[in-house]
Length: 514
Image (tube, rainbow, N blue to C red; front, side):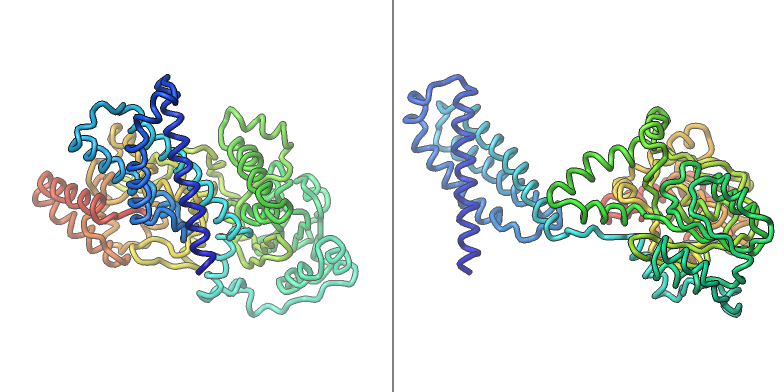
């Protein structure tokens, strides 16, 4: 209790000092003399300080109990200072103190508010940083959720296959390069004799081609893929060197694992400065744009690149593999995959902030829908994987979807990701209200009757989902059927009704894409 009171007193004294300094600053801005203004404003300034203290205390400005919510750090300052501004304005009006300079009075409140917001947010972030010394690994948590949901990491077709023991020579190579836990993971997933296994520690796709002889059915690369510049070429080379059903094992330092490593390596607040002002701009922003990507590769030579678990799995699937097992070992994520087909010919998805997503349009023709990127690159290749292991949650979205980036979650909340779809509206691919433009995978989850019915209509920018707010895939289909039947009877009236109902749910009920 004594500590609590002491902390509050420190905050109060510090805040009142800020108000006094803001008042003196505004006198200087007014180009007046302290000797002339101080006697004249002394009594009224004491009233301002009293009002400031009472209202700030009433609205709990000095509590700072929750350090983890940005909103809770800002709201008490904004509310209390707005009430202070209104109270002082009323006092000046009723007591006819028009001879006081409004520039000094209101300027004092404004300057003190700006400083309070800056220092309050700084205090909030420092406390939050100290409480969260180890950043959360969201992709690891998603993997654990998958495993708790019944995903044991082993493909059903391989469960009945007898694991093979590696030779002492291969075991020694793996332990020296990666450690005993990595050996355990590889041994657990090995179904081939040592003579059919090729172990490499390389970042060059040419080495795969020159060191495999066509007899190998398992390829294990012990170097992390973060140091491979031409990553797709590397995975394609691995695919071509294996027969159908052959296995490939690799490891990656994911984005969140990298962040944790930096935070452990440097002391606070150096770790925050290095990550957010050096590592993040160079490693995360430069590769995203065509103008800076070449400079990034000149600067880094493709070494130590930042790559997410989602992008790694997406690239592997795009290159013809099926994911069979994953495990986090010694600050790396180990992945074992199986060759199921030849590499995809869809080309590399773009890395930039805007993407064109393939969707099912009218008459079943594919259209490219413009959106701001909210998922990691190659996330589109993971739809079947996510659905198989995560299923759907309330609202029809994928459960524990680790493909969505932190920035993407923010953009979805404020609808920024949907704005580029206005391009599709202008060129006629979409209409304002209509069934949602679906990916081919999600489209195939619908009933056959609804698939045949919905391709007769142009998809819309505002789907009936936001009007009816269904909670499951079956309810989503029911909602679309109801909309299409109403649209057949009265097209304009139906779209008009659904638009305003969706607008109400979005504005007042906070309906959002997840």
